[in-house]
Image (cartoon, rainbow, N blue to C red; front, side, top):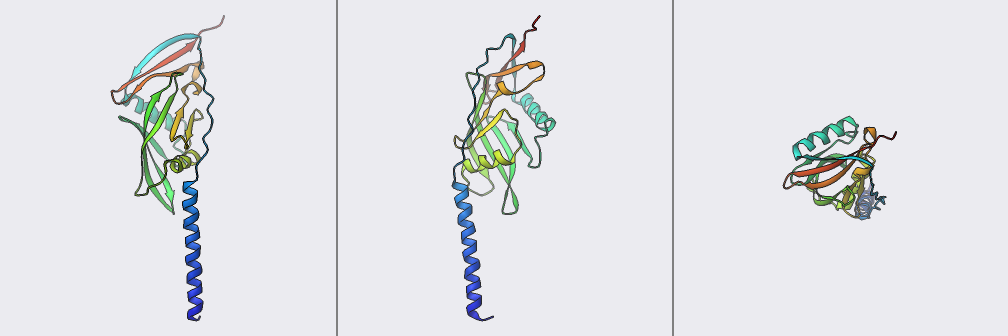
Length: 194
């Protein structure tokens, strides 16, 4: 091959690499559409109990739930409560798995649901937009139906009222203050109809 042929092949390869890189950057910066959440404010009929718990007990419950429901799936992730809600997982990037960590501040809603507002993000040494990472998590991670990831709002909506429990029991968050380790829920057991 002549020098001119090598030069054209090299420039062609360089152009392909630039096009791929520009495409990846554009896709990363495209906003994702959030799912709309049907907010329910149940007026449960039955007997209600207030349950107070702490981060350690709730961490154990979350780990068991992820394992039992098979949510650890092909892309494994962990949720841990400290002063904030921490989400640990991996994300494939150019053939490698990159460690990711997101932190969220929980807010109990008046209807008993919980909104996790994104606080910080760490994806290896990459500086990726939060909406891109949340879109990836939404597509690749297996989450319960009552958990809605909203990339545009940079939050996760946890609809506890839509969580199906045995015997038609309903759960609402009353207080979710992780910094002071004060967590309480209202558990409503339906009345027996004669």
